[in-house]
Amino acid sequence: MKLDRLEAFSSNRFLADYWQQRPCIISGWLEPGALPLAELLDLAVSHDLPTRLVSGHMQQQAWELVHGPLEVEDLPISAQYWTVLVQDVDKASTAVAGLLDQFRFLPDWAIDDIMISDAVDGGSVGPHVDAYDVFLVQAAGQRRWELAMDFDSEYDQRFELRLLKSWVPQLAVTLEPGEALYLPAGVAHHGVALGPCQTWSVGLRTPSGPEMLFALAESLATDETAERRLPVEDIDFRNPSRLTDTQLAAIRQLLQEALSLDDIKLAEFSGEYLSRWRQWSGDTEPVEPERVLNCLKQGHSVPLAASARLALTDSARGTVLHVNGERVDCPATLALELAAQRKLSSAWVDYPAAVEQLCELDAVAAPVRWLETDPANHRRKLSST
Ligand code: SIN
Ligand code: CO
Image (cartoon, rainbow, N blue to C red):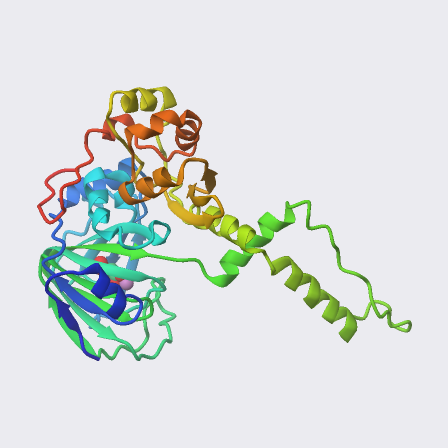
């Protein structure tokens, strides 16, 4: 396995040659300033973000996992072999969420979260494999990553963490601040902090077939037009309850009919489902539509909440916007502009019903955030949240 290094990031080249195909290192693209650990833990506690403390290392073979909330006082005194990991930090900090502006070349509905891990020397979460694509962005210090494309996928049953039982790396690389390692889903990895370090993981996740089927079944079951029921066919008069081959064929036929959505229904379902899948369920502040409209009337733009998930679909009347699980009626030009910029421009003032719907869907940032959004490129250091 070979690991290419991309020096000048080009999203087109990345999508053509690496995305969901093979890992690579990208340098000179992202350099988020590290968030002090105390600030990270404060954010986690005040926004109820999923937090874990992982202690252990390969030689010791005794991994421990503690779930948060965690205060600074809960951390080990030892200066070695532990890591704190906080998920969904982008939902709690506008400055952290700003890093995602560099990822707008990927679908909004696939971008899951930014997880920040802060480790002391030797800190690691052990060798494992994730079912999602990830960009591991080094924010401070150094981390040595070992990777394997071919590996024994058996898990070590001794630990709560899903760690690979036998670990044979095929390649290793040390990441410095300003470097990112892209890993497609399914590449096994093991990162070890070389001294204190902080890593930001930008994760992209999509649903599995059964997950989508489950949601589709739920939406079809409430659709009153789907009235045809299973016919009772080819009854075996000795054993009337037996499911005969003909009966099974009828079941297959009914299921296939339920699944054969026309293009319009498929697009509608997909837009709604993907724009609500893994949607943030944490606390959000209600936003008054009047306040948004007033701001727009004054010629300002209003940012979407970091947690808002968008999907666009095509229809005979043009592009359709879906936000947090609902279709939002607006002109195609505004749908496209909102997806690209994640901001309501002053043109939305003419669509008060859509603005009201976006507020009801918790898709608009709280007013306190309106002045905070900084379109500046996130290469520069972030100093606060
Ligand atoms: C870490 O940041 O320590 C772990 C991230 C990962 O392996 O996915
Ligand atoms: Co991982």
